[in-house]
Image (cartoon, rainbow, N blue to C red):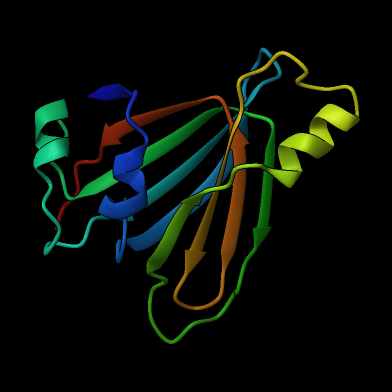
Length: 139
């Protein structure tokens, strides 16, 4: 089930200590980009806000749609799976300002999120919409 997330604040706290499974970018036929972040929510977190949205799985895909910028600093080797330790909304955003200085996204309502992981990886995503999707796993 795919859910358009209106209240982005749950990402900042609910994804704390979530295990990072994958991150990928995909360009659509219309030229826009989507960034997918698959992670497993920490079982100690209160997942009721997700249940209320119809998201029942512990593994969830976050889709950043209409992505204008993905900047990553990926650590390629870790002893364990990366864990999301911080998920922040960056305001004011230097990346959004840089896009606008280039003459892009002047009228777009963009959000900048920075995700930091336990092994040192960092992801900055500038986008306009977030969608969530339950991932059915064999676990």
